[in-house]
Length: 152
Image (cartoon, rainbow, N blue to C red):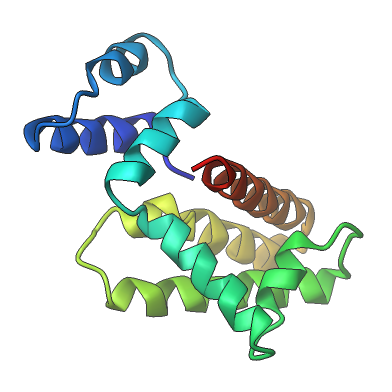
């Protein structure tokens, strides 16, 4: 997800463009996590690549092209093989989406390294729990981004 450092970088870019974001910068200099209001402010003034990525996944699901989005947001737990396939599919989609961007921080924001680590851990030790927890984090990221977009 978008980190404090990502938000600060984006807020400084916005400030350089003349947008009044000083209160958000001051907040993030003291606190460790961005608020929903900060994310909304950034998104109102520049499109977040991670939001565009998740929107692409949703549209792909809505057009019956992909089940990846629904596998991320499923309420019930997936079978271990489905979890691994979902993470591997997500990893590939992140790489493909990153090809079109001019933003080197997108892979970090999209949790690419975390996916790699979870898949490697499963293949070396058989431990599926970190993969399950990571999929839950993706679901939380989606809900957060949808919530931040609902009041715009």
